[in-house]
Image 1: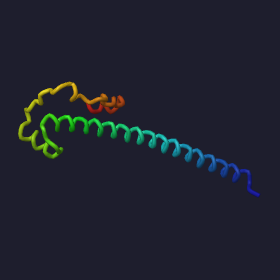
Image 2 (image 1 turned 90 degrees about the vertical axis):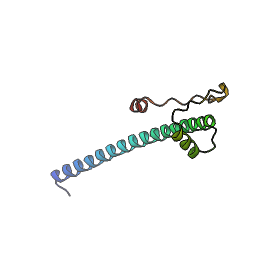
Image 3 (image 1 turned 90 degrees about the horizontal axis):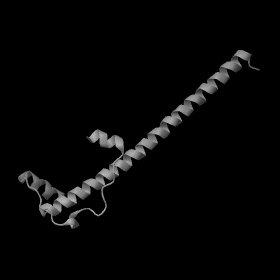
Amino acid sequence: GLSDEALYTKAFATEAVSSAMRQIHRHESRLRRSGEKARIELEQIQTLRNEVEDSLMDAYGVKTVEQLHEAIRKNPHFVPARKSQQNEPTNPPLALSQPLAKRAA
């Protein structure tokens, strides 16, 4: 069979490999979780952006985002008149998680 030294070396190598595998797995899990969190935040931002665009398109009386950009370029100081409270989004925008809000500030 194997000498004691060879057995120790093999056991050490096996332990080192399984330790490395555990570390890799931990890192993968962490990345997956932060990726999922980022995806959710992106969806919230996109929803918020759509609500803002819709509300501005109403205010400027245009039908497309392209027309909106054009209208803003032509008249950057236009302040839309507040119609009524009906204009307010029915559900308030989702609060972003702390780190993203800080980064944007």
